[in-house]
Image (cartoon, rainbow over all chains, first blue to last red; front, side, top):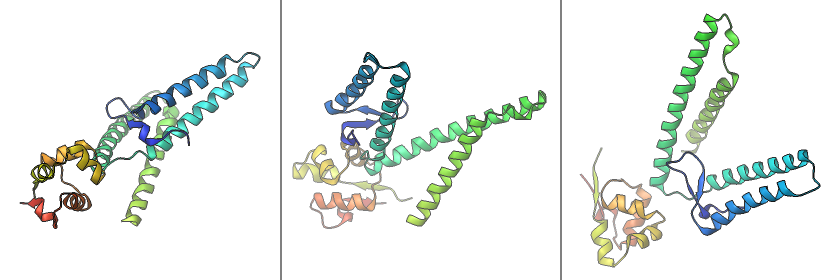
Length: 143
Length: 67
């Protein structure tokens, strides 16, 4: 991939993702912004093509960011802190999503519309369940 | 659970090592060394072993104390 893990730090207080730690990290960010801006200002290219190029660059950035995050070097204390923080964030998210589903079911019953539940919430919960089961299966096998 | 204390600060000072250089030698951040010296973080056995080695101690028990 393009970016190097040593150029970035993980976000701890401002959401998820990365922020540049070194000047190379800033060059990387500015380079992507410049590429996106240039791709949108080339004359003689259709709006649709520009959109595809922009989406391609965005996908490349997301994939590269995920690769960098997976390879960020954390020591054992940082790994424990990250695991606890992410677990707490996930618990909060699951509680809110479950409360949302309960509210939507209740609203649906009152309005005689049982399909009022947002399928994205259900898919997110099932996705998280699969990832959790898979992770536990892997960890049980590993140690 | 046993409380773990240590004398990393004294041993490090005796060797003239900075927190940064000790952190680099054992592959952790300086913040982790600070937490260890303040007895706020219990290290893994592997990290305790590495720190003992860098601080020229033969046994982990020469650096870390279980009470």
